[in-house]
Image 1 (cartoon, rainbow, N blue to C red):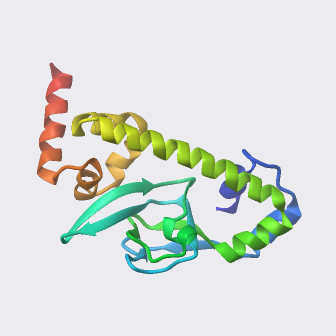
Image 2 (cartoon, helix red, strand yellow):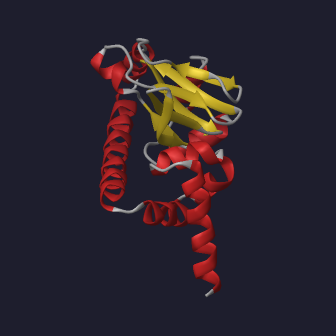
Image 3 (cartoon, one colour):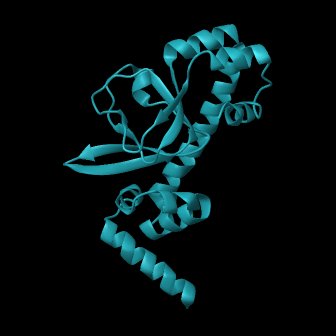
Length: 193
């Protein structure tokens, strides 16, 4: 797993053996079982997550219903807003699959960034990329119909359709599970015609 991580890092910065060892000494790698809740609404946290393997999701519970807002899969990072604002979380984070996550906290990151400033640079680049991607995703979501959202998902993240339970996928698309079934049937019909 560490090779996967260092391959990813090397896209952004060159890492020396000393830097690799410093990262490995932090004990960041965690195997987390499917269904595990990493963060609950109302909890405070300093933890950030990076998915090496598996899938995690963020969701709100509104009037007893889960509203999924995002999925994070291999090589995607998530720093909950509550970490930055130092306030209780507004949402939940849980594992959709058995996952291998890199879990770091703000104290660790500050220590690594002070010893190795290039990691700070890499984190900034990653944050900017993530922000740009989230902006595009948000704009697409706001301006598209559920069918367009589903087609976008098919095109951009087809793996999610196989990996995510139907009710979570429907919630993410902003529709009910039965509507998702009808929508899928319509798309299949269109593709035949």
